[in-house]
Image (cartoon, rainbow over all chains, first blue to last red; front, side, top):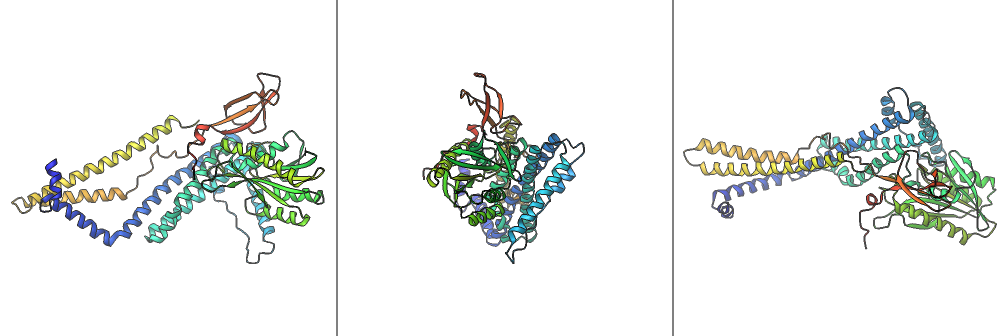
Length: 372
Length: 145
């Protein structure tokens, strides 16, 4: 063995000549085919990821079918309905003339909500309302996984067809970020299947902690509010109606409450989960101003319009979490963040209002696994 | 719940497969090198045919290694289960005597649910927390930067 290794270093030996020939050949091949080799390597990595995404997508579909069968007892094969549902789409309104576009978007989203409610009721006739809401969320997660799979597959096949490095690069560069989002949706399957609170539920839990034990009533679709006395003030605390998975209509609720109170509300405080930057602690709480709410923007628009109409300041409390936490079962630091956010809300109320004032506190987010 | 024996088995199988692949590449590489060496040794002698055969085998070996780097494996039944489930626990607290109890999550549990009678007093225990088990939730050390 040792003489053999020694031979490698001798240029005039046969083995040395072989090694040199191989390296020379490899070098020549690399000069002419470097980009093609890189393209093939990237395609291979995309293909491996695509197989993984497909497996997660299939798992999502199977979980949805199993849950619908378990909870809804449809008494028939619902696979075809679920498959049809997973391709459901929403077309955004035209925004070339932006005036009134939010109203159009709201109308489209309301229609989507009605269609989903009808379809879920159709496939799961024996499920309770809470269970139907959870099935809706579960189908939404499965649908998102299906879209991710189809987009990655599209770029993979397009890249394979054209063998163009720039086409393949587009998907290859964003693969790590896409996988983070896909894995987040994958963990949502368990949460929505079982009805567990998720990272997005922190706003609803804050509201629940403030209003628990007080009578509540519906103030907008799937949204409830309760009047809570606090240090001589009246807090009107609202959240989506739980424990089924729903985000309610907080924009509409705030509008209804302020209209009813004729604007006699001192401040509005919104509490929501917020995306953290790398390095920030999970469950850390930040305070600011504005409407803390995500989504397509309809509720945010309504909140801002109502606040402007009655000249009510908007305060916000954000609980920081990573993308991997948003729809996966809650982690303890987020629950600790909820307690900090409750304190932040109370501090804001004490700092910016007087005794006798009315304050509106809105816990924003999905209320799956959280009652009131 | 949590990482089942099946999941661990699947991971072990996948790790074994990658090791087997690497060892196979190494063996093919060594054999191809030896073959080329034999070919060059026989080249220029009376055994010209044998030399060509060895060189052909050697070249084919290296071509096979190149192909093995670019091929993709089909997802096997074991590799299919990528969606891992986490262990979730429910914390119950008695509002009267503050007794705390932690148990595994059950379908139907939700935060603020009056769940079961308190074992210490006559109160009802309420679910106050539903969260992932601590050891699964945060294994990473926070950055000091």
